[in-house]
Length: 381
Image 1: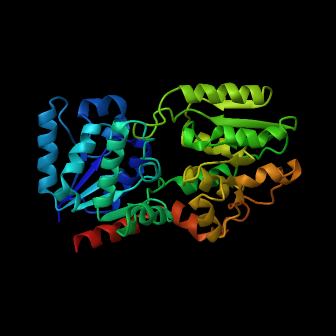
Image 2: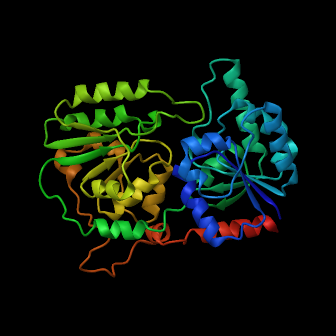
Image 3: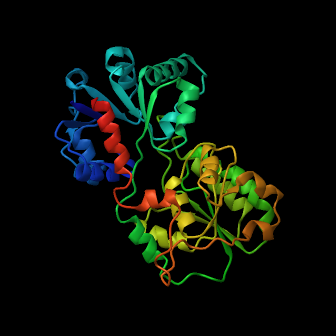
């Protein structure tokens, strides 16, 4: 069985998956084709370039790119798309017209390509792009999900398919990093620290959260808003700096004395130490998002709000996690909003504490790769 993996250069979502596939799966018959030129990847994503012996499309020449892509797809027994977000509409058209290739394809969804691919149909171009995007997703018979409840949206929007769970794994050092954070001195005074969303993508509805929190503006609070990434958008939508600037202006007007923007990315171990000193995190996206943040925050004993209508709210409740509904903030007093009897899930003085099954699965090294082994075994039959 010859597997062709098609992906865009993306360190944030791909790095840990590629590393752990190398460590746990025989990749002899696997080819990873990146829909970018090698020169561009070396320049913009140097870590990604070093992860694996990738193949790249030619740097120049549209016909050369098409020929390379066509040959690789024709030679493969299975074609695995890691996210159906394409940087070029030409790629979208290319894949949509080659129905014979779609029939032997697999779609590994990454969230945005499942929930946020559709454009507002304001003109003929947007209607055509929506048609092509839907056609590709509808034609592909097999889907791998990266969140446990995403199968609901797949069946609702694209009909019955063979669906497997193919999670994007955490790094193998996550549990060690989280335990180390729990050994640090915990802040016990100062303002209540409230994180709003985790990036500046418009789908996070920052202004909606701020409106809910505005009634607490004269309380002893400090709002922290991460804005270091998100202006890249999703598949050509939601991109640009205008939204970011508007949110900052509104936030400063609403909370002139108690707003902080995290405008630079920081290394994970320092980000976890920052989360250790957060009290509350509020998310207001209708689809699963910020999952890593939520798992970290829950491990650290923080109070987390997500929309009740989001699939992740139902999932977390079903897993026995204490999660609160964003919609309820407007009905809460300040005392109700900030009260929290959750404790960190790791205590240095009691290191044998047992994790909830879902967090044990997420943070145990290589644990989620068992799903990928099952996935490849089933595809090979």
